[in-house]
Image 1: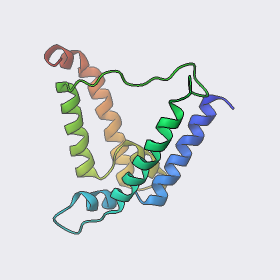
Image 2: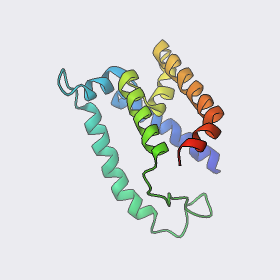
Image 3: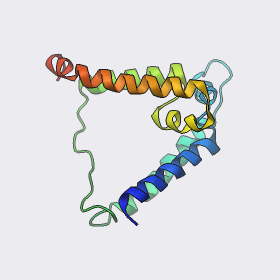
Image 4: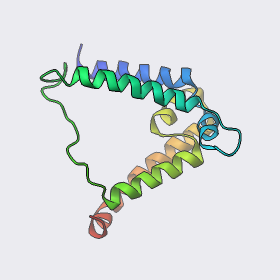
Length: 143
C-alpha cells in the first residue's frame, strides 16, 4: 500500500471520527467555547481522547528508526514564539470561535451539504491565497 492510499484512508478515518464526535457541527464547538452560557463539554472529551492517544502512540512510533512509509521523521525543530506565529494563532482562534469550524472539521462537514461549511471552506481558501500574496510584505515587517 503506498503512502497516498494510507493518507487517504487516514483522512477518511479522521473525517468519520469528527462526524461521530459531532465536531463537524459548529454549535458544539461554539457551545464548548461559551463557558458563561450553555457550556457543552463534548469538545473537551474529544481533546482528552486525542491527547491520550497521542501520548501513547507518539512514544511508541518515535522509537522506530523511521516511519513505515517514509525515510525519516519530519518533526518540528523550532520552538520560537515569533510575531507571525502569535498573530496566526490569534487569527485561527478568532475564526474558530466565530465560525465554530477549524480546517479539518470544516472540510469534513462539506459532505453534509451545509451552506455554512461551503462558506467556511471558501473563506479559508481565500485567506490562504491572501496570505500567500501578502507573505513578502509580512516577512518585511515581521521576523
